[in-house]
Image (cartoon, rainbow, N blue to C red; front, top):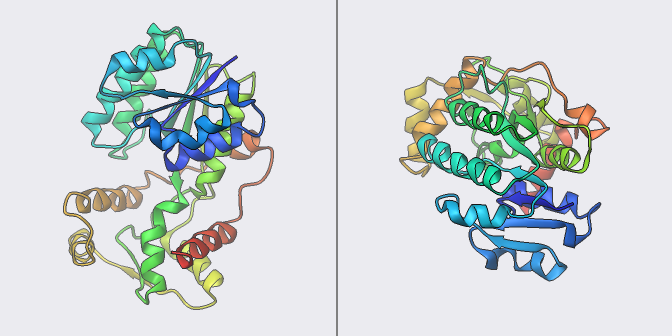
Length: 289
């Protein structure tokens, strides 16, 4: 039995690999990466490092050869690029006769109004059409996504948002990684859909939790989309990123990430990492930079 993780040197992928290596022998694990040199540390452990590029289908088919379980971690980029790349990966998995595909999707993918959701809806549909047993890991939102805002607060700024009273189910990336590893290591996850979310909270509630960690008041500044975009530009966010951040705020405001159902604890076999603990980890990480 051999398991492969795509994007294994990324932030999520590296955490999943670390979890798998607690239970699997290195020889039972493979990773596909665009730049094998970045996975030299895994190769040194005995992990099978395979080169693959989502824009080069032939490399994907070769990388997925002989693989029983595949974790397809969603790629980066604009929606059109990601849809194309995911389609390449799914087709390669079918051609390579992969026996099981786990895919990192997004919360409520088939119904979500989130601007990122079409990527995941189409990818889920493509996987279903292959007939390969699957598990969709519908991740809500990484707490680490708020690192920039937390950094600004540490520098004396208020918690800036245009999300109003919209709620988000934040959880640490480590929890999402452990959930993915649990599915790959388990034997009863065929044709499953897991909604993975922390307790839905408003921006004010998250800022209050950060205030407890920092032992100071963290004021929240609610602005409109135009003001949010202007401020993001002023603090050095690249021009092409600003509209994405605005869309995220708009989606939160519309309730796209307010998903009360969660299968997290069932997969993890433990409670989620407490929010204050997760925020403390992020703050400590920023202090070390």
